[in-house]
Length: 394
Ligand SMILES: [Mg+2]
Image (cartoon, rainbow, N blue to C red; front, top):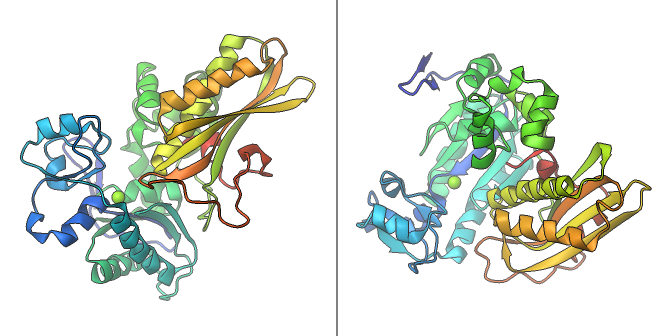
């Protein structure tokens, strides 16, 4: 049973299962704030904001009660406190979040080895084969939520779908404590209701750009010729068109590398216009920055790669202090690295932007390199295990 809610969104109300809906995205509810409440049960049901109090700080997390006042993660703390003066503000305790995260990840690992963590509180699971012998995605998800609650006293929202893209949307569909299954026969109706913001890789800036071209809904992306879409979103175009058709062939990749990430673009025609080269690098750098932000990671080093028309390839790096995931900061540095190349003076056939020396947001300092994991330039790696920045950001 489905209905349109007041905002015209499609709401799937009835349990639908299908054996092919076995990709699960699990996202803990207001994770940092919920972990804080475990120690402070008296604050349950009240607006709580996690973050440092200083005026230059930003909100790290907020309970749903605080979100009702318009408080959101990454919002300046000063603004959050104006919006919700009654909220209790707690300083973040990342050791506690990491400990809680280990508990949650241990539950995931009990279900399947195919777990791909995205951050401390979020992961994809491929439950096609699962240790519980369950055959329906919905049943695995329900059981998983119950076990997480029992073992950690925390609630999770889960989405089950035929692929990652849809599973992630599904987990955010009903929050907190949600469970949404998108069975294959429901996919098309689901897609019809989605705004372009739901596209994996489309952040607020790209969304605004698409809207300014009259593209409002995810399905509108199907109708535009790929070349026209490319003018608006660059190299994301083919990827977004796949997603708009509900296609996402990414596999759940356990233990994937997050020490570095890079994005490359080979151009149909060599670029000779420096302004255009700068623009391309700026766009790729911003894609990577958004990917970092989504992964809750900060980069210390920004690298660009330039391949000239004679296939000579160079890289240039800049180490950034403090580590950042700020779009403008990373883009500015990446573009400035072009000054140390002959791009423009020599035709360019390929550009790349990478970040490395990544640390997890909230880590006080970068952990010492583990044996055998000395940081390497992102482009030294044969092929990035992970395509996101190439295609967009999560
Ligand atoms: Mg979460």
